[in-house]
Length: 172
Image (cartoon, rainbow, N blue to C red):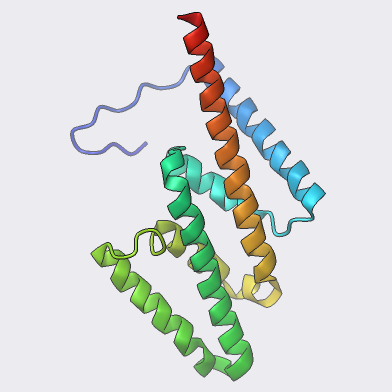
């Protein structure tokens, strides 16, 4: 567990709480699998990256969802540009995408365009630029999966928070 300077480490979870959270995550994932099958979404890994990022990097902060979604979409579009360039012109066709990636690194270092150029952008451009994925991926399907996953996972978290707040209000 990472601890930031000056911050006290979070107390460990009890076994019962960890089991409850695990069960909730399993139900959440099962719901996304059912939704994905019903909508014909593929590839689902693009949506599970949203869940992982939202839970582990953004700590379920729903205010971070817009930058997560936009960054993921932009990173995916950049990876598509890489694929399209290579297909059209061989190795030299990668140059425009590589220029975009270098510019994105520069912007991220300076904190410019944080809605678009952020850690989610870098995650998606890195994953989707993998040669194995580049050979078989339909980027339009990846983009759709990212949007659906953002709405689904973000919506479930927001609904859960509202339910908890209503129950706390009723119990007070």
